Length: 151
Image 1 (tube, rainbow, N blue to C red):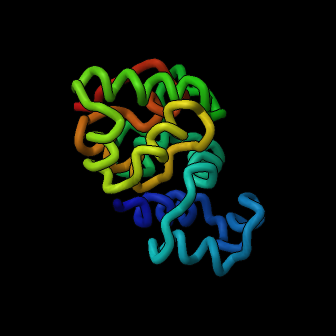
Image 2 (image 1 turned 90 degrees about the vertical axis):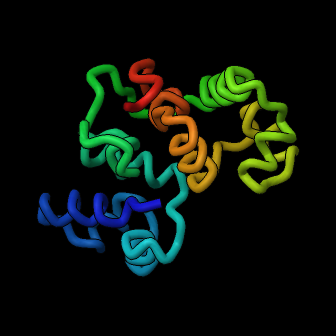
Image 3 (image 1 turned 60 degrees about the vertical axis):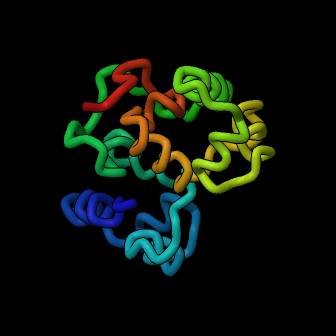
């Protein structure tokens, strides 16, 4: 995963301090700094808030595309749509929950919680899925309907 360069570039381009970004996210500056250095994995909710703050897509922040935003992007992660789209993706590639869990090196119960909209997908697993299947993170999270797949 390599979001550190993008979030730092977005922040410095706008002349915003780490302290300000931490306040926007409601976290300590030291925590934000760890995200920006990528010493800690940024939770998807903060990744979404950062993308919304700078009006860019999560795909852009994660380095999947150089397109900063999609014309039909919405601000909120749609947990129900995320669960449906994850299930659709799994079925499209003929994977069981267990096979997908093995691919991501997590428990099947975690996949079940994602597919039943109990938990939001964790950032590293979202990244792995998007990278492996060239699918848009914004699409999977229900923030956009297009593009589904990235080139």
